[in-house]
Amino acid sequence: MVCKLYLYLFSFDQPVRNFDCPSGIELSYLNTINKTKILSLDFADLISMETVLKRLSESEECYLARQQNQVLSYCWFSTQAVYVKEIGKYFQIRKGEIYLYDAATRKDWRGHGLYPLLLTEILRMVARRNLRKVYIFTDSMNIASQKGIKKAGFRHFQTITSINLFGQYLLWHGKIKEKDIGKLTFLKTGNSRVSC
Image 1 (tube, rainbow, N blue to C red):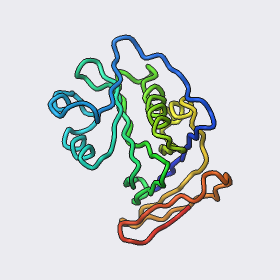
Image 2: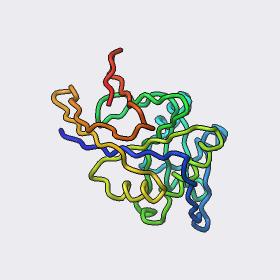
Image 3: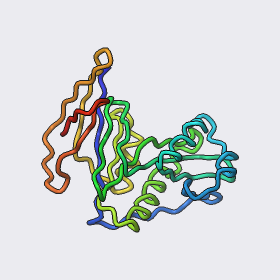
Image 4: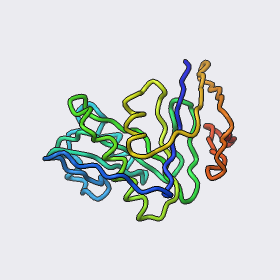
């Protein structure tokens, strides 16, 4: 299987964009909601409650848009290494950086601007933590995700092509030209590293 990932970066040398929140929608930082309230949330078919609780227990974070207890859209983020299934490796985040991943929006709420709204709310939160860089990846075929990421102010800086041959991943990528990014590090399932 061949996969092409577009890598995007937001650095705080630019202002965070503003988007209006649709009427009746509440934005929530999931990590501040008590467990009883989390268990009452309806994620529909977006993500399992088991996955939500597991990620929260591993200190991963989530921002979501909801209408009462119905989750309409979410995006996870972490300052720790996160497994990127498309390339079969862990993305190693450096100090002062954060990685956004696994975002989804209910089909009936797509096209309402929830995704760039969530991304910019996460950027505001990250700015208060004095983190310098925010990374997000998307599949090259996911045009809607690319549009939302760009609308939130991220810029494309790298493309990785991955081929999965019987569980072994081969990666191709161009050289990163921007000096402020440095090397990106991906960890294999063992202790070895592969960097771009």
